[in-house]
Image 1: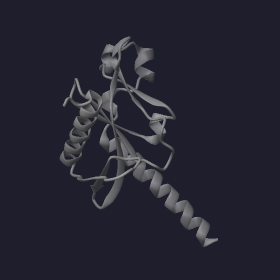
Image 2: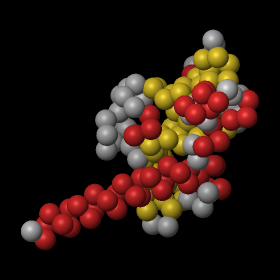
Image 3: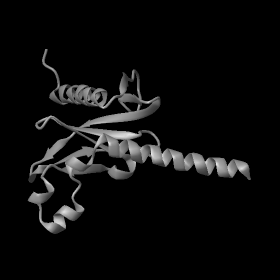
Image 4: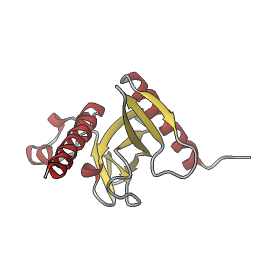
Length: 153
């Protein structure tokens, strides 16, 4: 019996992201059941909910890929991990990065773009795990401080 190619690519994406997270000193757990995220990354006892998406290539711009994020609300996922099958590349974005429907990423190098395009392009090289985790942890620290200030009153 043949398998749905989309499901196979999705599984490959999950394994690729899990392997990438392990290389980044995370312990990785898989979810079982209906969750809005696929993996839990544990780094230094900080748990992060990771939703994995296979990135689809835009045919009119073969250097651009996108992931769809329309089914998610703020607070359901800590990090989106996109996997570009053809390039064997992983990128990471936060909920604030992705917006309400989709997130597009450019695989060109900054030097290969015009100055105006380089200024606004979301480049693959910039959407790293370190960048995403720093943003998530900074956001959590800020909300914890606000909660403490409110309870002190």
